[in-house]
Length: 58
Length: 242
Image 1: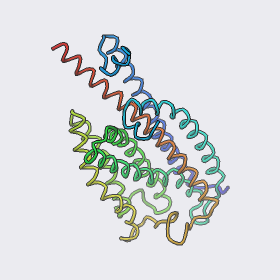
Image 2: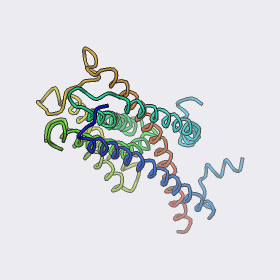
Image 3: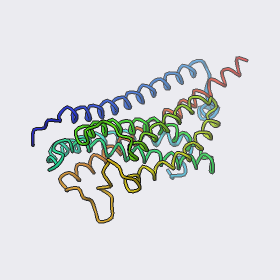
Image 4: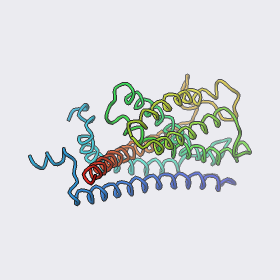
């Protein structure tokens, strides 16, 4: 593989790719945990959806 | 489970939870193999090693456009069929499309500096791609501005349909105008002009990015369905308290 004078541009491009992919995964994972936590808190207070209550009653 | 049953958000959640671990595993494996093949790809006879910037640049460009095309179908689903998952899909896809289009712009800029001598030029391809990124930001802003999800969905659907005009402009900009950006070299009449030693890693990276996009889209749609349940429960809580 030929040595390059532009290695900095290549590393920066792949670095940008890593940052974007990791940021998206982190954002979606944290958002999922947040929504699950809020739902659990609301259900602890006795507030649940009608369809969920019906499925429990069945 | 029939495909039509996935229109029910609860059925969709069950299917997504079942499929996502497999999709995540497949994405990791294909990404690892694609990066390995990308590292082994030879330098280009003109561009040298900077040709490797193509491996994240081209898939992110394709997926940025594919994502808007998906949002356009979802917009029709919202306006015409009022499909329950259409606006969930559109809302979940927008940040992914914005991130991929931003990655395309950044990697393109980093590729342009050594090849063209400049990070940016206002040519048709680059400008139409920047407009796509701004359209994504507009859609995200609109979702956040209008509180009622169904009203927001209709407004976003109209903006998405109007914004779809940008897709053929991006695709054919290199044919319609003189641009610094090169013309089509993968999917073109007469076949690809790229040597297989570079084309195969490029297609593998495209497959890896596509798998990643599908996995993240399903996960983001799951989050959006949960967010709407939270909203419903909070409204219920407020009505009980009132």
